[in-house]
Amino acid sequence: MQENSKQNQTNTLTSSMSIHALTLPIVDHIVAHADALQVNVSKHETGATMIDAGIQASGGLEAGRLIAEVCMGGLGQVTLQNNTTFANWPLSVKVHAMSPVIACLGSQYAGWALSHEKFFSLGSGPARAIAQREDIFGEIGYQDTAKQTVLVLETDKIPPKEVIEKVARDTKLPAEHLTFILTPTRSLAGTVQITARVLEVALHKLHTVHFPLHQLVDGYGVAPIPAPSPDFLTGMGRTNDAILFGGFVHLYVKCKDEEAEALAKALPSSSSKDYGRPFAEVFKAVNMDFYQIDPLLFSPAKVAVTNLETGHSYFAGQFNEALLEQSFN
Image (cartoon, rainbow, N blue to C red; front, side, top):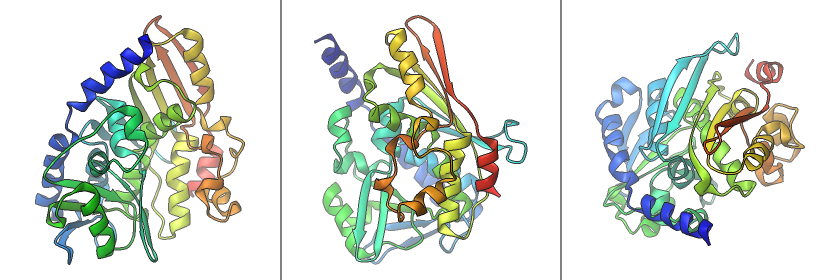
């Protein structure tokens, strides 16, 4: 009963928070500085705004950093920094979120599958919280409303009008009020925004192992940024491996010490039966079917869990520089 009360209290607090109010100014900034950020802004035949961050445009590092903040619903602080952990890959992305459950699961998680004929992409960002197409929103108790919205797609193709029309129907907004940010993995922008999911990956694992989300207070994550690759499979593998073999996440929770310790042990990627090979190899081995991969693999390499009730911290996992090098180079 007490747990339900806490959950309801969390839901009440978060439901009054508009991620759109925080995100749309970032989108406006990207549009206003498109040339400097090396992105292209255009109108789709449906009237929707398209921001190309790597299809025809170059899409640089700063564009990727800003797009990652869009993905997090404006609740995240994404910074690029030097990190000496990996000799050949010092450029890293650090991610912190003011309200991590809403930022990561309610916005950043790429959970909205959109397809038409040969087009397929997973959508992330604030539009998910309006459309409510995923069960996770019922679990975290979050919904947002807005007159305009934005969706980030990891794709190297302009979405067809049927996909735009579906998003318009599901958000109950005219296409003219929709913005799509397109981030292929082969661009620097795409590489940064995917690697910036290091904290989100940890929260999704938290959800997978059924840790009560209302007991999470805060957290941050760090991961090295790989070089993009013109080959989709190589580039996608590198961004996953950046987190699986080089990602670090520190979570702050309120629970019993034994629960915090168990969480730390369950979180790292090394707890998965599929751990031990670059992600591209794992992906090819299952005929490129994500759903055949052990879901426990999608996790940071190393974690720390601090229990704020007792001040005790627990650590698990390890970096794997050899596999990181094999993947990155």
